[in-house]
Amino acid sequence: MMGLMWYLMGMLTTAALWGYLHLRQYYHLDWKANLGIIGAFGFAWICIGWSWASFVESEPQSGAMGLLNFGLLALFLGAYTWRKFIKPAKKMP
Amino acid sequence: MMTSKKPAQPENQQRIEITDVTDDASVNQSRRNLFKIGAGIAATAVTGTSAAFVADRISGIEHDGFPVPLDLDVLKPFPQRNSIFTYALSPELALKYPARNHTFENNWGFQEHAQEFGHSMLDISYALKKSKEMGDKPGMSQLENALSWGGWAPMRVMAPFQHMMLPDNGVNSWYQGPIDLPPPIGRVEQVAPERWEFESGEAASAAIKSAARLYGAVRCGITRNDPMWNWDPIFDIQKGKDISWDEFPFKPKSVIVLLIDMDYAAMATAPSKISEATVGNGYSMMSFIGSSMKSFLHGLGYQAVVAGNDLANSVAYAVSAGLGEGARNGQLIAPRLGPRVRIAKIFTDLELPDEGYDKPRSFGIMEFCSKCKLCADACPADAISTDDEPGWNPTYEHGENPDYSWHHQLGVKKYYSDAKKCFKFWLESNTDCGACITACPWNKPDFWHHRMVEASNSFTGGPLHTFMKIMDNLYGYGNTFDEKAVQSFWKTGKDIEI
Ligand code: SF4
Ligand code: SF4
Image (cartoon, rainbow over all chains, first blue to last red; front, side, top):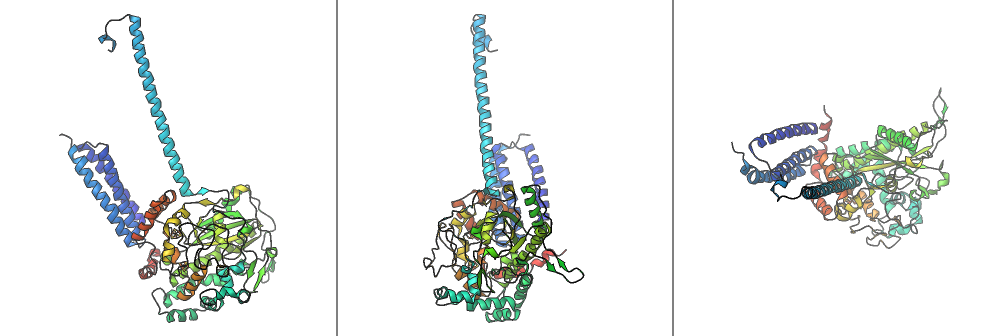
């Protein structure tokens, strides 16, 4: 089960990198946007890794707390970064 | 160009000016560069130092001496007759020290209750009867009793009662001479006639630890024999008398300390017969791995004796061998395993050069303990100290009365537990409890997120440790008397299906 988790997280990381490069084509990403993206990705990564591992080790409460704390942090930070720093910096066609 | 806009000036002056400007710029530039390089070096140094600090804390800070404050005017080798197990099993000691029975819980009577304990260990029918009398609670049914019975079985055969500190017994025998095998082989020596000489201390250490790993130990450390941590005199419960170290078959030079881990899912059910099963399995593995290590040393031409809880203070030796720290709950906490370990020792006359021995190390565990107290909160017998800081004496009720607190090796700055209350709870609950192991935040299975948290606990402190302790609870770890854990345990067999 943990092997599957690492495999999926590897895939997710590759997909996220591809998404980031795609985003750069259309938006000017300054340091704040980059920091927000890295932070949101980091929390999302910890959220998946933490919760998955907790369910595997039969500690569902820890899994739920991981989803709640790290997942929400990732969502908030991602949304905030998008609205404040990415969306307003769209490149002119 | 810079000069073209300026009023005409003699060429040399102009040149001088230009030169000056250029010089200033180059000086400023080089200062800036220097500053940048300096800042870079400083940043690298700060980052490097911080990284080194963090790495050092995680892998443990080495100490030249014992890493816990000792009062050498008070600290003396501990006579084994003052240990709870030994006293409880010995009618001779009951006669010699009647006050120990009288001062505890209105004449509770250790020997009388220890009989039941021994009986449960040796008679499955009796163990089942006791569980039935207690209402066959979850984790205490015939199924779980049978599991425990199986866990302890190898130890019962290989080294009976080594967990109760019985020395010189089974594979823990002190005998180093020849043994008689059935014909046609006849008499054979246990110890090889020639001694293997290691190239260096490092080579010896590497070989010993490789052998320990192969036989099944999860950690191995090597330290010098230290009479301060040896039971002295030793007490033979069967013969009811003290034994001097002069009767030991050789002068021990080194002590090889082995850690054997217990199962996380089984320990999560504590106190129950399932947690008792993993404790028993741990003791059995101590005998199994210990006897292999003894034979390995014999094969190298050195004398060796295996010890479980007998012969010496296992926690002190494990600390000396750099395997962890002594904690509030009185047990060893090993990084990445927590207190979920059992400790075996091999006494040998193999002496290593200095570099072959491990140094004690501290991992920030005692600092964490001062903020934590989860084991004390979880202890059903209130046996664990809730003091904020370690001290030199027991601080529990009646702790100042030597007839009540007779079982401590004083002179060590630590948390003093009332082991009598602990032992009483074992007998009342018909288990060997272990709730203080389960509740400890360092007791975690081997998953990356626990390693991350544990690493951060090693180099942080103060309020962050309090925060981590609270989070451990909120995240649902360390529950004791947990019926769901019993159900979860019985599903763990799925993990080894193909
Ligand atoms: S084993 Fe149980 S009774 Fe004994 S100290 Fe630990 S928690 Fe308390
Ligand atoms: S539960 Fe807390 S106080 Fe007790 S031994 Fe573990 S870390 Fe120390």
